[in-house]
Image (cartoon, rainbow over all chains, first blue to last red; front, side):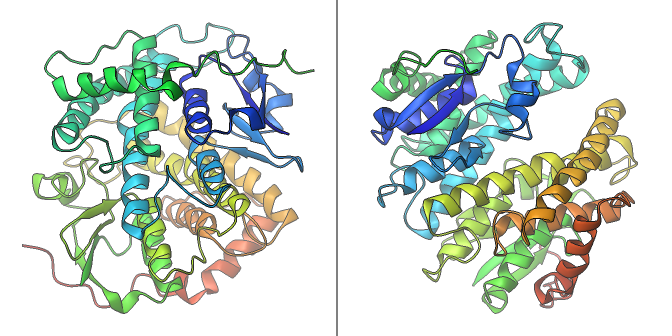
Length: 219
Length: 219
């Protein structure tokens, strides 16, 4: 059985949990909790799974580790031969990957840097180096990003096209993280706020933390 | 005819130029030069093509812009229905996307931040904000990344598997940038150095700057 190493409430883990639910693959994986608050993701046991020391990581039956949300989503979406999250035509693939990366660069990753560098983050034991000035720049970038995504959602129902995709999941991850760090969607971003309310009603998003019982912490 | 907005010697543009050559698509595109040194990529005309203000950008015949190297590569690789750079099986797709992202995070993007923040970069007119401390951290991360990729290349001939892929192209982009900023591969990284020498002999890599005649600067 495939295993997912993650932390149930984490914004990046949310991306893979949502993808799993959208692909109806929840029951095909076992979750293993890696304690972010204790910095277990930066310890040798986890670094052996993922050089970059991030969550989530997928472990295949043969012991192969696949990290990075985009890579895990590509893997999961291809499993049944009917991709629904990553596109089928060249144009769809291109647009989804562009907006997926843009949602990382301009929102999710920016909020993450803000959290780890300009707030207490995961606490002094885990945040061994902080650069507050850089963190604050990234907060501003994220707020500007929200305005950009608002303009996109004024034009179409989803971020990359007329249908839900991996790019929407990444933007959802960004807004989950923004919520956690108390960075609200600006009042004037009506389209983004309406979209976010709608996305939170999607079962894959709503039930992401409770779905299925995580295994007890590894080792 | 498709157009590529880029800058011939840029490390990110190199990724798409290499992909085009590998896919034998050079003659299907027209190149339009956007002057990085003059900061044309941060001006409104280019920001309308790509919100993030980076190069390269692909323009399709219908006027659609696709930015981000990974997205452009996915698009180009899917055009002929025979992907050779982004994988065909779920496992190949997952591994290629993982190593592609890792080559960005741990080398190419890190070198880029070093260049723009802890060296004169593109000059004072373009580099309106610098954070030298962050830039130097990223330089150290890139050097550590070279050691990591060296260990991978001790085990297999290419970064993601036994065959050349998009992930190799991204690592090549990282080493092109490292060359530009005089960040040599550490002496002890024999496998990475041998791989880099071999990659530079690939026609797609060797001829990337001169291939085909760029159009004169836009507008």
